Length: 349
Image (cartoon, rainbow, N blue to C red):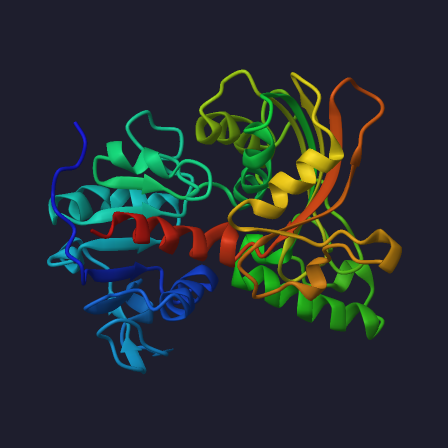
């Protein structure tokens, strides 16, 4: 049964995991979109309780420091929307308390994404799915979000049969400690520290001046869970189990913004011209595609932006009805915090 409680026009918002990289971005996005909150609560673990987080304000909440509160089941009393980025185990632990308090959990973890009673939502693609939530809405995987934003306007021209995608994923996808490790390890490496003496903790191998074709754990078929997420989440978001997705996910030494190379095969012809027109008109998409002027999306230049950028659009001559292109989006913004707050906007009356 779908959620029937009425969302107030000025909701109370809780940010769970407020001290993490995505939590900090939640606060920034709430300000940037001037989300009409009547109150914003910063929640985190007991060790972070009492810490002050700068907040630029939004809605009825003035600019100033937010004092971090320890997250407990009682933290959600009076809350209307709970933005979660505290890890799957915490989301699972707190779900019942959030829903019992009458709040809607918008969860950035993988805990509930494939649950049949939990919508998996990208507002530019399937906003209608929030109509059947039962108190929990899942934020998709970062690499999936930017891909489906670019695929949806093309899918509307002709159904998609197959997608082959290779990702170039930034350190930010592994959180704030991973970003710090890229900084620190690069400095160590340039200072001549031998490989065996480098600090390696956030990744399986050295990330400085390296690419690691391993994100999340390996599965029985030798794919990774990150790759599996792109396969199953795309089907759910697009509402089409017939879309085939072959993914290879790679971590690269970039701080923010994931890049993805896509080859898309359609069930009917889609010209480059028609695809370009559809993408130029699509919400959340910006075309950067002037190869004569060396204009194309690059992760190092797009940090802090909200859109999914598309370039290198061209015909794929190796298959019938094929197109190839390259996309970039900020993993912390559109790939996480922005998408979640956009879902919250859809909940407003």
